[in-house]
Length: 341
Image 1 (spheres, rainbow, N blue to C red):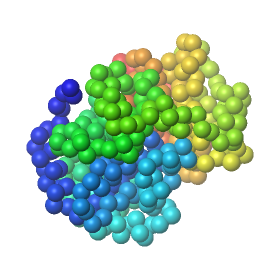
Image 2: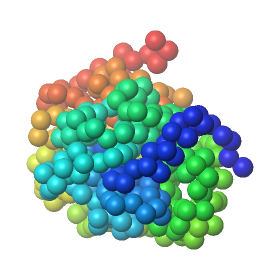
Image 3: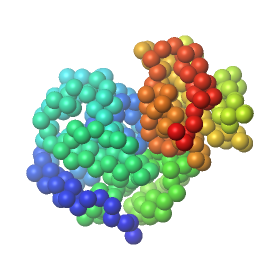
Image 4: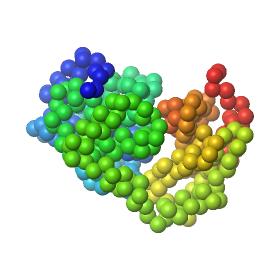
């Protein structure tokens, strides 16, 4: 049985919002990953159980191809493609769910619409230090994923029977992807109680794993080989690894959003490597992805050197400068960083 962790006053207030609301919008962060899409679509399917006028999922930009099989994915409104429609939906909403992000800036170009909306706003997230911009804030960083938290919320609402297979597949996908297929941030019995309940709903967890992790485009697979053979740099005395990709390198492999998802985890399979970093050049900044195993707090490293944060073993950040400067900052950080400070 799952332990009760969510404040009952928040659950009661959320129930009132759901009962009285008629137009719902679910927003996730830019460059949405499996947990963002999974929690959003899982909530979408749950809300579809009720007789509501409108339920929409809105994301700032596109998401990886390997997530587009998910039930309901084709109905997601992408702001970059339909900015006026997305903005109007957000403005007209009675209830606005903010999923898998802790600060308004995380929704990129959607931020002003979210901030300006008069809707009753609900934050559901598992990242540290949430901003106070919602009427209800349900934030538990100890959760492995927002999908885990979303499942627990629906249970607390007394509606676990309303979770059907479509929602269950979405929730499982988010839990799986946000734990590296249950290889980090997943040493809690509650996670596996939830997985067991999702299997009872009819999901095929092996098929979900294959769809997410084993159905690659040719260009993605070739890019992975290039990263491992040509770009990976090892720092054996620091038990660390790093690789960095320019936009031209990405373009040469016909890069699409999500093609590098999971690459940062690859060096962690090398014996002795406990910290891995991946830097990807974008138009105006460098995106940093950091992963670790054991006790190394990559979220503290991200906060100190890359204006970021996240979880102990999985975090990210950004750098405004050249790719070479970002790499040098990383290497300087390896020499200077003391996680006990």
